[in-house]
Image (cartoon, helix red, strand yellow):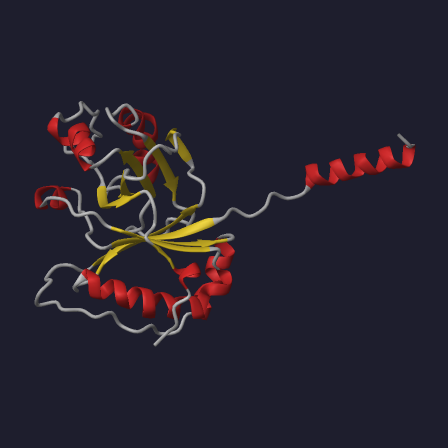
Length: 262
């Protein structure tokens, strides 16, 4: 190898070693429902809301997916604050792109609602997390079937519990115990990518995968696990929580469907 070529290779390797790391991709994630018929809401979401959103912030997005919720019995829905409509993800190259895109939003068309027929169905919870899980407690990606159920939930620690104390319990005590649930196929978690400047901010998002809802119920309800409770609560799930049950695959991919705003 010629000396000049060798020196050029060394120079390139040195530049790569000292180059700043690329900004972290993030995804805005929302668990939400509004007081309306889900079939009508889906039509509005596909043809109107998503397209208006893309007109505003499409240039900043790399992915815009939504997952339909699975219904669960009322006692479970109440205990785990289960939302019955959708989980939506909007992927950005980095947190700065998400912040910049906020200035491009214009007022959006309202959804078709019917509060009289659907009372109490009006919740939305949002968090921005890294695209890649910050913790992989059971890092499997099941491939042999498409009917997995994901239990996705956001975590916020109760008033009077510091984030540091809550996270210490979650990471060192609770998550290792969750990862041993019978029938659990995958368990990953994401710490918020936004600064936690508000008391009502969600701290993290968790995903637990099971073969189906019956497997989830068998693992968590039929034979309740002997979890180590934190000092602030004796009842699972121990934290402020909003959750949703979805399939493994998004049923809406707005950046590929190419609808037009009416």
